[in-house]
Image (cartoon, rainbow, N blue to C red; front, side, top):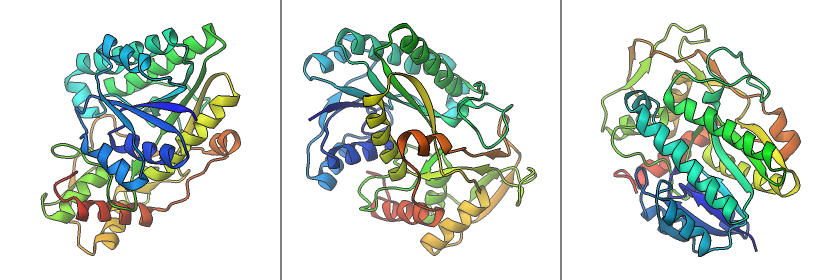
Length: 336
């Protein structure tokens, strides 16, 4: 039975991936510093699966503690989610983002190398496509970014590519996510941000609960069907299953391979708000505000490679994503 280390495993995507791993028969070790997550997520994972995930409250910036996780466990592969992830905050605190995301990853990779673990699935992002590529995004396009958070993903991909080139024993899959939303259908785990949410659907959920007065929409004058930005939203459970497919791919393939995980089609901000209204049975008041710097009109994936290499494609539509999000929100109005 293989043991998988999941960094950031108490977070949104990480916790859902732990559920899928445990259900598939893997042993799971979670490393998380709990800066933007809660240890209660680990208990919820056990409640869903009936299985334990071994938990370490550890920060990747602490190299000795990171090494300890490897010395105490025979790790076969790593799924690396851990990192700061708020775009706006990264602009305000670039040094913190570069130190945490890149420094933590370097410590992880050094610990992996020392312990002979050379398989990693990395949590990358569609932000690596920058603003100069045209949709749908394909994995062979040049990468760039518009903010420090995005550049940490670009830089880490380059580091991983260089490692795989230098040592042919490495298997690296860099999964470029688009916009994960939704929650586990049990309502036990879901997106659980601290403070005012940065992402669209948790923000809408707070409006639906009455905690926020209205949804701010940044610009309605884009060249899109209704003038609001279009993004490729993907159910978090579909995304989690994509990580299992990537693990299996890494067993049989060496080198560095970027792969998009999305649905291959986009939904506008107003379409998501309408779908959420349908899910919760309430009106979502909308206030139009000016565009944000760096935002683009369209972003969606070409998913051909995921189907070809992983045998994976998204299953859930927008209505299901919003219904599961609302179910989690109603059951956890104050978060986990």
